[in-house]
Length: 235
Image (cartoon, rainbow, N blue to C red):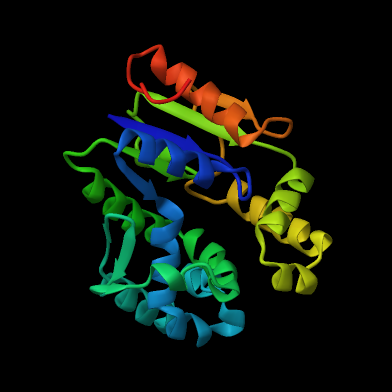
C-alpha cells in the first residue's frame, strides 16, 4: 500500500503525512530529505560552480558538470526508520539549514538528479507499505499508487505557517515578506521543472488547506482512507 501526499512548500504536507504514518505505524518516505541529503553530500562541488548553480554546466555538459555528476553517483543515501543516512552517517539534523534551503532547489530541477533520487526512493519502497511525501510522488515516482492526495494553499498562508514554526530568535531575524518571497521563488522553480513538475495527479484528491486546521486536513484524508478500510485510527 502506497499513499502519496504532494504539494508546494509550506502547505503542511510534512506534518500531515508524519501524523498519519505514526498512526498507521508505516514508513514515511520524504523525497525532500533525499534531495537535501544529496545536496549536503555534494555541496563542495556545487560551491565550485558559477553562482553555485549547476543548470548551465549541465546544459553545456562541461567538465564541471561531469565532476559533479561523478560525485553524485558516488553518494549513497538510505532511510533507516526516521533517520536519513548519507554514506552511512546520520545527517537528519543537518538537512534543514538555510544552506540546504538554497542548494536543494538548484540541484533537484536537473533531470538526471531526479532520476537518481527517484530510483533511490523506489528502492526504499520495495515490499513496504508507506506514505510518500513530496512534490511528484503521485505523478512520477509512484504513479500507480491507489491513494493520492494533493494539498494546496496560497503563498501568504504558507509563509505565515512557516514563520510561526520558527524559533522566536529566528522570527526576529526573518520577516514574513522574506519567507513569502522564498516560497514564491521555490514555487516558480517547482512548477517549471523539465521533469517532476509540481502538479496534482489526475486521480488525486485535492485539498485546499488555506482555511483548514491541521486536524481538519487529517480528518479529510482519514475519511477518504476509511472508505477503503485502510486507516482505522483517525476520523
